[in-house]
Picture 1 (tube, rainbow, N blue to C red):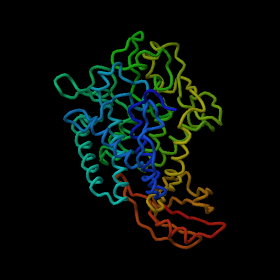
Picture 2 (cartoon, helix red, strand yellow):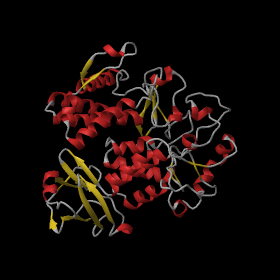
Picture 3 (tube, rainbow, N blue to C red):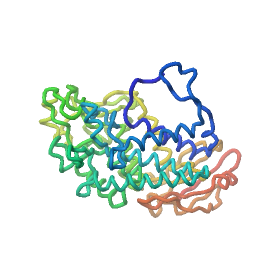
Picture 4 (cartoon, rainbow, N blue to C red):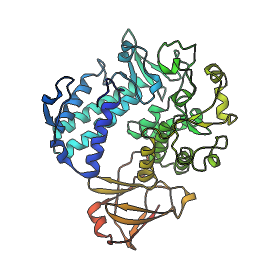
Length: 435
């Protein structure tokens, strides 16, 4: 099955997913597996090449698509905010999504590591140079007055103006959370930029139910589309239109973990969890506790009423109802963040990373997991900090470790996986982590 079109971010998820697979498994040989290229007619005789060649061609295609005189991919078919697809193909080629640029940077940065693992230093250096160009143009054109814009727009004279930014005179929207979260996750931000944008989120993009896509919805003018499609034409005020989109909220939670903000991180996780929801969101409606909700919606009578009273949502004076349930990739992303960021267990290039982010309220937390076929009971103690292990022991024996790189805080403990496994018992193991 193959859709006739797709959003503009699809090509980056492919590279990121493959890079993550190789990072976790070490299975570089997968790049030699032979797969056919898709062709619309007579697909049975399609050209067949190794997966590595597929990716090389994809990278070349992405670079070839850069807007002239920049290292920016055009907005094209949209980004993670489905409601902000441009109204015309011409506009889609002139617009630049800061979030998509960050995704491009992340995908190329991660695949650079794959090239290094395969010994292809020439292609690794080439991708590194392109990433530096992307970062340079990103800071030059898409960050104005220290704030990342939601979008850039190539004007007729070749200059790039900004949308969804305090300098934006076209939409009335000043802040967009997508590039703020992804700026941290992709590591394109400096530490100072990351801290500054998290302050902006706290001041302008938060409600009682969590992080919101923008500081306010786009103005509704009877459904007339001027720049964006559904955000300007939809009569329904919910999901992305209503701005509390849980998929992006849990990416906000992930960015908090990367920065080491343990209390805010766990609160954000709870705001996305329907269990005991009203304990954490007091103005929330009753939620079905075994379902993931894709949004938190206010039942305004119409878009005009939503425009007029939107700011009241932040005060907690409106009931917040759950949106679509049992939907899409959100639950998988959520569980992944629990394992890799809260419990802090990751596998990367033959190493086990132990990088929990635990608030003091969870001091003494016990959890049991199966790791590489071994049963582990893990105990977390917050003695000095809420991240950056100070001591680790397995079955009472101290474990030596180094720290992984984290440009925003002290990183996690890095232990060779073979060394770790050599300390395990066959049946039961106690892993003690002191922070």
